[in-house]
Image (cartoon, rainbow, N blue to C red; front, side, top):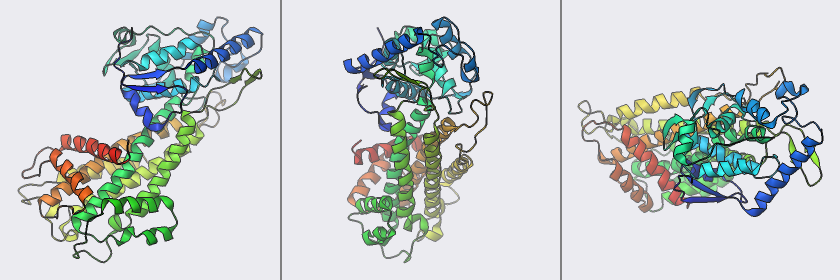
Length: 502
């Protein structure tokens, strides 16, 4: 029996949302309703009927890619072997187990649409895997995001067959050992099973979906911290004016302004600040709101990918059609991931500039430099700011779009490619780095109150401030803050998730 401790449950008849991908980091029970199982079985039977009739079907009776003009192997097991084995050439760092498992969940939902011709045993194997801590070891580099995520998904199938490596309970080991420890059987493939497993953009969609889920929290965190900074420094709140932002004409900007106003309820300006604040305070509704527009667009795109079918060919048993095409071409997600990437970098720029303002005594009405209680003897936020600068620099370097880097490959069968997988991985990287920029800013705000800034007057902000202060004691003497950064990042995620009801 599989070794699992599932607490979350998903139903394959439902729609898959980006936030649900995060459930796959732990054992997850996925229910397979009878009507979904019947749909999968009917399509699989149709594929067997068509292939036995002598009709050519890509990847079933033919070779792969530009070798489609040649006949494939006669035995289905051998054809499945070829599908997977010639793609086991990836390299680079391994995907985190949570990302690999999210990709399996995404692939499972695609196969459950009953258009891929996969056998029920494949779907059962994926659901059994998700019910445990097993995760395939998948190298990051290898997919160009066309013809699906062939190489990373081949590693998924490879590990489920007991080959290569896998993670179990967070430890990397031979896949065969991981399967045994998890109580899973080796996956046996035949017919179209192998191609159905690898010929889709499920890794791209999973990575982008995870990036979107974190980006939704990042947008809310930027609103929270901007409000907290406004209150702690005693700034005026005219920049959040309902009429002002309505006149601008951008709904997401108005929404951000409303969120900041809501956080600031009960606060009052100190009267000691300039008439017009620096842009890192005054223009936060416009900047964060615009980022929110990009997040919302990426969310809309990735939901379509998560609930669509990206195989080739597709099978329509209800009218006897086998349709060859290019649904595996992940251009929509590539564009969306690149746009999200840029938005996340600008949110990082904002957090870095806000921290810079906070540690500068010339712009904080006389708070000590670096928020140090004893400047020179102790350095307080100096190291945090250096790390923030390095992180923003890294994010900027990664901001070049991947979706326009097309390179022909595969004997020019893939003569234009979207590189959506790389774009999605980068967006996920940026979302994770942004968490630490926000955590550093939150620590700075906590320290600012300790060295002379006012405690927030708004009740909701005061409550959040107290939660941050419980995690991070005041910096009286210099001490390591790396663990605190991680703890505060987790806390901020929790706070904004509670506000959004997530």
